[in-house]
Image 1 (tube, one colour):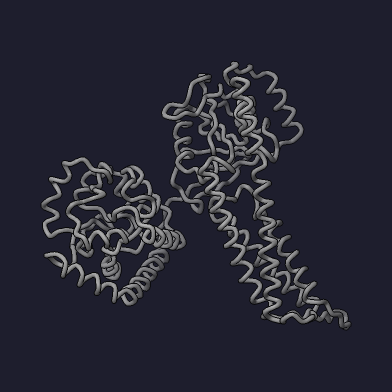
Image 2: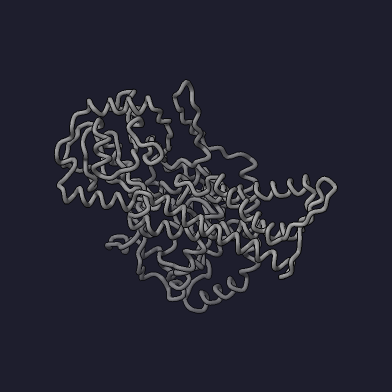
Length: 526
């Protein structure tokens, strides 16, 4: 988790920064690198600098094209190609304005609303839902203004025209922004269209934050250097290729050397109380940014609140709450969706049951004891996808070298116990459909932590038992994040993050991602 901090850069502050710069020790020559290296950095900086402006300009053009298309198409659908007018009855006088002009005014107001809502700010592009929320809010505000103005000025605007243009325009804008985000994320994976980050703090905190940022390139933070108390120039952060550019007093020159536009303070233990503010004074307003990264991870945004007290920005992290309303909402959603799913999928369930029964010896369903809510045991149902004596063969296979799973979860990409029909079912996760009956019975949820085996729970550390605060799920964050390739640490992190930050919208996102993963299968189900 990072907290972006804006600190006003006043002329006095800038002068203080300049004074502070004059008394800083010069970094060793290695910090700047050779002339050839400096030239490469300069070229990279020129390429990266202004990416947000270029991207925002593309968004502006595509927003305009979408709105022109929606508004004028709505006009043609509702009125045809004729020259229809909007009547203005203000001041007991009757004036007419062509709908062609009114559509142009509406499009202009909509574009102004998107700009005023800061929907193209680099702070909201590429991650989170803020960009989409701002687009939706701007659309709602624009049409509220149009409706109020129509009432006050007594405009005879066709209601159907507005009722079509508003939802159609908002939905197409959101779809357009989603497509642009897919493109932006692809560029960030390649190291482009991202903030160039200089990390400042202790070596251990720098290494930890660098690992988290490098694990999520789509977040848009490209780590290009670090300043640590030891200032071991020409060295790198342990476990990475991130160069150490000097001590924490060398931030300004280090930023210039590596072409960084963002400073991320990873810890303040080794920094004097005034140092963070001094760093902010040396940043160029509007182009360079300061980010504070507290050493807490996997905390969702709604649980975080900042509260300034005497100039001190206190970060409040709320403890997880599981209200009766939340539990009722989740259970009602589970029950409704699972009952509907069983009804709609009943032909497929019958076909799979017959296929399993006719192609291999043994029962149709595979019943297995798993651990659920509160650490209680329950029987989980699946279509049998393995031979009848699969459990007896497990010790022998566990001793072999595996190419999937991790130190706790047993998996094999080509498990010899899987039947031909079972292999097809597992490829598309069809063997898990009987778990809908577990959901109806209340032992499972549609979305939740992975249901573990009792033998796996015996290996749990104390903190891992927090995953039993929620019902296990047919799908979950673990399933849409690479089930067979996840380390045990990552599996636990995803489950605990889900339990502590549950939202109904988050469940919907996971279900949609699960559908995508099923249509493009790659790993074996749990």
